[in-house]
Structure formats: structure tokens, C-alpha cells
Length: 193
Ligand code: AMP
Image 1: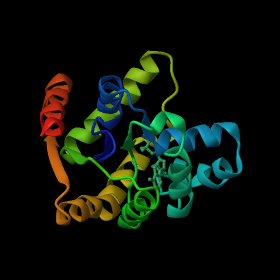
Image 2: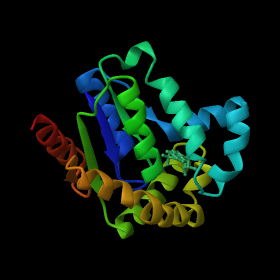
Image 3: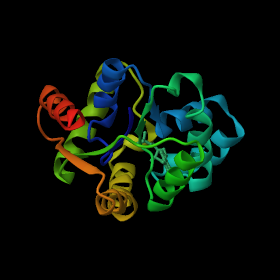
């Protein structure tokens, strides 16, 4: 199963991806996680991405497309993968189409988790509070200012990605405001179709 999970930051893509990973035995490929690992490792990509990520901006299409192209060729992706946080622009979606075609692969589903902005803002505040309470460190881009920028960027650049998949008849939507288990159940139903 080759799947794209779309939705704004804080929509629950990470939580639901973890469940889908278990269910289908395929890895979740999160460009955000990969970029954070690159920043931590201090690699060339990490050095380029660090400042733009901290400010809530978008890393260049070239970098993320390169990361994904290399990643989907790894042996753990033979049965498929879940893309989380990619594609984030229509240019990335088109690059993904070309990449899959080149590797003779096809997408099985594109699902969008739909959540209102107000709910996202309160979720992100809770996520930060819970992380602090658990003794962890809040992501540098999970402060309200960066988050609002990420959300604005989502509406400007990533919402058109949903329209793109809708226009080619591939988009399915799930109510991401329901309880976590209910979202999982709806995802199962939508993917079973
Ligand atoms: P995420 O964990 O998906 O919220 O991503 C965290 C940050 O990584 C984003 O705010 C961007 O700066 C960067 N990032 C992740 N995925 C992409 C992508 N597909 N295109 C551009 N930047 C990305």
C-alpha cells in the first residue's frame, strides 16, 4: 500500500501513521522527522534546513524530493509506505508523480485528515504543555508564532495539493476532529474501499 496522508500540522498524521505502519507493515516516511534527524546529525542537508525549519518555513522542494526518492528505494519500502508531511507543495506532488512513474510504482490512496484551525491551535498548545510536563523539549517550531506561520503556509501552499489530488480523482477525506480511535476506524473504512 502506497499512501499519502495529507492534513495540516497537528491534524494527527503522525499518530494515525504509527497505527497504519502496524496494520500494513509499511514504514511511515515523515520528511519532518528525516529533516530533524539531519539537523541533529549536523549533515549538509541539516545545516541548510535548520534555520528555515525553526522559523516555520518550508525547506526547498529539491532537498525534500531528493530525500524521498532515496528513501522509497530502501528495502523496507518494497510493500509500500505512508508519506507524512510530503508532498507539501504542488511542485512536490508533481515531482512525486514523475518519481513513481520512473520507478514503475503507483499510489494506492491519498487521504486528507480535515481539522479546523482553532482546534489545531489548541492541540498544539496541549502538545507543548504535555511535552514539558513529561520532561521533554518542545519542538522549536511548536511555539504559537511558528505554528501560526506553518498553518498559514499550509493554507497557501499545501491546501492546493489536496485540490491537485481531488482534480485527478484520488483524494479521500476523513474527519480528523473525531476521537483518535474513531479517526482510525474511518481511515480503515476509507482505505478498505
Ligand atoms: P513536520 O514535522 O511535517 O511538521 O515538518 C517540520 C518542518 O520540516 C516543516 O515546518 C518544514 O520546515 C520542514 N518540512 C517537512 N516536510 C517538508 C516538505 N515536504 N517540504 C518542505 N519542508 C518540509
